[in-house]
Length: 247
View 1 (cartoon, rainbow, N blue to C red):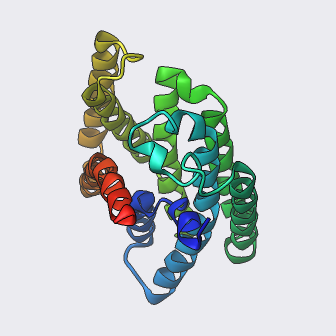
View 2 (spheres, rainbow, N blue to C red):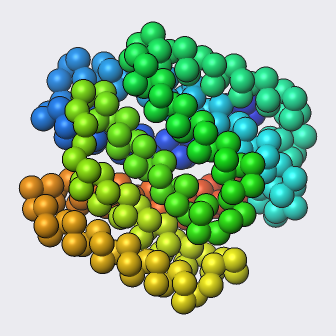
């Protein structure tokens, strides 16, 4: 067991998703100010490092048995035996409790409510709903929407329903395309293509009916694509890291 193994549980390669929160906060605030930059820095520590660090640790625990049978994922700290499940559970509890406390004292009850929603979604996902194909896809996409709402909350703005709905549909369409690229057997081709086409059509309809927010959609589409690319290269990076550690 080493400090570096606990740091790996924080999964920094997934932290690109925080850009959604940043863009949302800046967009709804009408620009970046020193005060907003300070709030975003504190939010990153509270939300990404503490709360989601704990959530990632829980995911690592629930995925450990499956990871142990994977040629690359078996190198992760828990399946590799570098961190025990009990140790990871204590670590996750500390991080989540610290994240919730910081949310309350820095940002108030609205942030606590949003954090709680993230925890509920991730627990439901890890508890078994990730094995229900299309429901799992909706749950994954909903966390993107929640990041949008978190950013707007920091800006003290409620996002328009149409804009939020359009962004969620865009996240769903990218998620379905991603599943198609993975050729996951639990997702049938026709159903997946139909879901993707429907999500894209509805996103496009909302985009063109709301030209005021076109730049918003384009910015977030770029973020989603960058995030997808990071997921593609992540396994190669993890394998390289393991080789480096052994050398």
